[in-house]
Length: 479
Image (cartoon, rainbow, N blue to C red):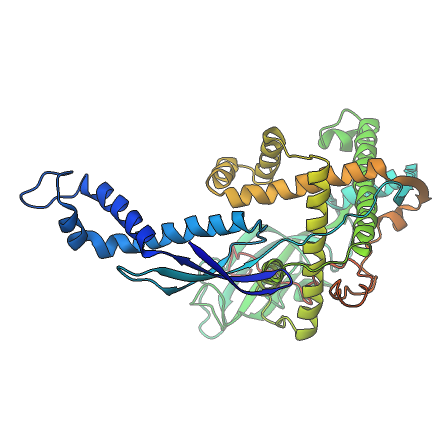
């Protein structure tokens, strides 16, 4: 094998590799011997076929198989002999290859950078701590009641208003032919006015009405309505409201606590407090971690493999584009956004390399048991589909590695926290939970060979500008 260096710029190396035809011939002969063990040619037993006949019958086919094996084997040798540390798979281009000739191919390989890790001992980290008070528990309980609202019947002669729940009977017909179609009649139906459950205009015409009054509701079915016989047609519904109910938050007492599975209200308050403690502790760690990552980013400036940046950027943009597809009014990623996303990708790659180096220095590893725990946690997010999740990770090693990476990062962060100079600062709940998205946009760092890197700040990928529209299934023709 002969290796010629074509170009070396920064982390990128371009090499030309020549594998002598004699070596290729040996590989071809080895493969033909294997083929000959099972090949069937009239007049010969398997394993007894002459080499010249095997070459004539299978030589061209085997040559293709040998090409891949020869490239892989010799590329690995080059990497070892040159003591290269590949950042990604080399890019291979075959220049010459044919029967009886040398194999000549080029390989372009990006290598991992060499850099010195900053001294992380005594790194100053501020730990924001929020004190949980009774009012915080009360507010959390109020939020819980918002999702467990009950209702009470209105007594008296009050007219309906938006937000009320009406118990009603209705019977409908298409206006042009006075025909009642299936699904246009119902008795004892509950409807929250203003919820948008029924077709446009239906609920609005029930606002300001009283119990027992005959109401005529005129509407037009949307052109895209599911029932083709009603789509785009006008309809008339005769409606009578039987009862009016108004939403009422439940009283936070022992009965409410028992409905939620607790012994009494004190047990419920205790569970809420424990959840708040856990939530705030997670937020505290997140803010400490951001400080740590910012410090690592500020103190490391080195060239990074462009291929790794491109791969990271592609992953970010694909995620955003997938989210934006749910909204037809959403714009494509702009050039300005893409530039910002590339800076974010560069930061992630650089920090990933620094964290990997710190982890290697401290001999940090993720055990199989820890990885299995992450798989179980992931499966628990999909009740009833746990088996499918387990099979997915068993069949996709790459997906499993995506679970390993954050576990490894958190273990490195724990080591850095242990070595840091951590000072506590009491903050309000609002300050602790505030999202730090008002910081300056991330900017690209220049090469370490150029000007000193400017400070970059973390920033998530741009949020969607408009949320996806919600759709609901229609159970009756009025809906």
